[in-house]
Image (cartoon, rainbow, N blue to C red; front, top):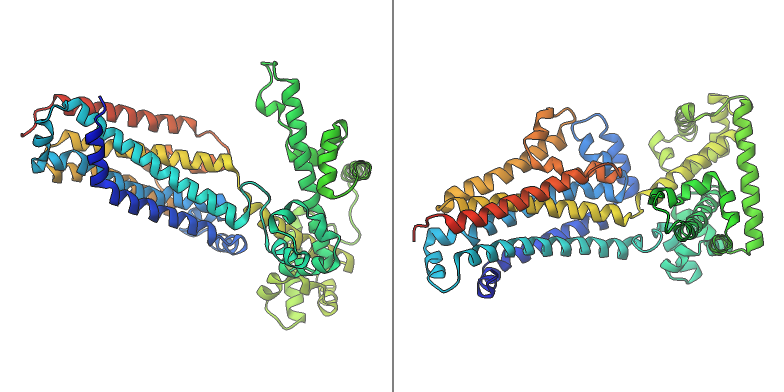
Length: 489
């Protein structure tokens, strides 16, 4: 069934276009990753809210979300260009030019010819997107260290110079920054924070990292316990960092988890036990406070009014310091200036402690948002990459089917290229229009590759199965049609 000479000839004819598209796609994907600015893109996405571009920019508050535009647009169009022209070259152009007559005059069976050519197109597409995906994976690891470790942010880069430690090592031992006053100052400056706010931020990050490592240990232990229990699903067995944040007492039941958490904090196991005890006490006190409905002095700062109060503080601080609000918003440490504090207290009826707490909270929240944006979920990345690959294979089957159905290159290119490009244009319309007609979803197979669902960990599997089915059916039909049709030889 497989013909080695035909496969070699297909490679020789099409390798240049394959190499160009593969290199271009890899470079563009790497450029998306290298050029990602978590703070900058978040501002752009916020500014675009309510415009025609909001759907295109709304996901830019995370690195993988930012890559969605590559997977839905750039990666898609590059794949379409490759499969349309390659499918046309593989079959119909040879029929149209007469070279297929020479190929079929050899002892190679017609079924072997078409099977090998379809296999070449499938394998070349797979290899292309495997290389592109690996390029993105490698770039993200080299740039941010976020594939195999914690993201390297500006404070870690700066502190690594001060402490003469590698960035990767320091990202896993953040307590070294906390233990060095100069490193703290340099790191805080790198994140546009003062020492007070940065100390709070660093403490939160170290705590979350310790919970994350403990969660891995506890999950592994639970997998061993429930290994033979068919009623327990993976989601039931897994313990997440979020669960431990809400209930840190779970760590106390595992010695290995205690050791892992203590190691991240750079303290002894006994000290970590005490730390957890303090956290548990604080959580209980916070819960009691909420149940009793106690309010803070003068003005109760809730999630609902915090943003409005912060804006009022920023505006009054800017006015007192003869600046515009954007300058203060970009450097929230200015709020703590005595003149700005005085003006803010008069404008909001908040006291000094509340304003400083609000400023610290805003700075820490902003820094944590940047950290979260740089996190890299390898499972999500895998499904984005696999989804695009299956989509391109489905589109390639359309082009290949047209290439075997017609005997004239122009007609095959018009159908086999026109349909995929129509799919792409409909995708563009859907991306640019917030209120795009629902019917457009049913006019293109690209909607079966639901990147929004993948990023949100929703249901997307059936769409990929449908795309795989389309590819299988059309490739199979192409082989049957070409084997049985009359050719103008």
